[in-house]
Image 1 (cartoon, rainbow, N blue to C red):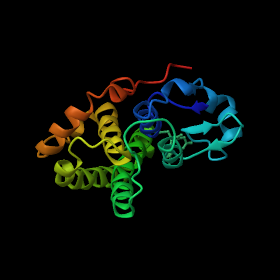
Image 2 (image 1 turned 45 degrees about the vertical axis):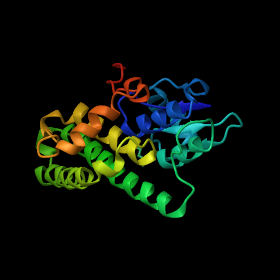
Image 3 (image 1 turned 60 degrees about the vertical axis):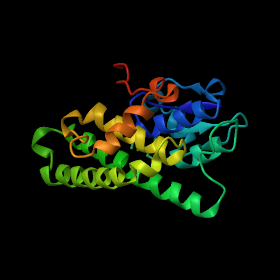
Length: 203
Ligand SMILES: N[C@@H](CCC(=O)N[C@@H](CS)C(=O)NCC(=O)O)C(=O)O
């Protein structure tokens, strides 16, 4: 399998952590981060977004939730998406919350990269508000998340890791001691340590 990726993307990290947890990391070849620039990514994903996973028969899967669901059915390890209906909905709902943090943080970062006179402060505040409310919600769920490894906890950890990486001044730990403790433990998992976000090499 071939994964179109970027070393900084929280969505990519989500699927890589899923792969590590299911013992599949060795079966995934990472493309050069440059496939976005050279048009290869577009050929596999019309939306031109990473992650996109190309299977050995040439089938391309996107987006990160679809790839994670695919990987959850392969290999061995923690049940990433429970079969039980109620548990599955709970995991998918928390995944949506964490994924929304990724969406808002990426949108915030993208906006800050526009020319200074084109940046809309109201848009930045709106994204920060989404993140703040989601972090409040995750704080109230930290006890339930405990040491469970599933798609929702992986996504929450990748979202918070991305906020640390790109929005370090946000200080989400302030007022969220339960979530901070939960994250510090989860972030020590080898799957998280091995996928820490990095800036792509300059092209
Ligand atoms: N909903 C998508 C989001 C993926 C996404 O936004 N990826 C970003 C990188 S963090 C991207 O490829 N952006 C390029 C673009 O939007 O053109 C997923 O979950 O896979």
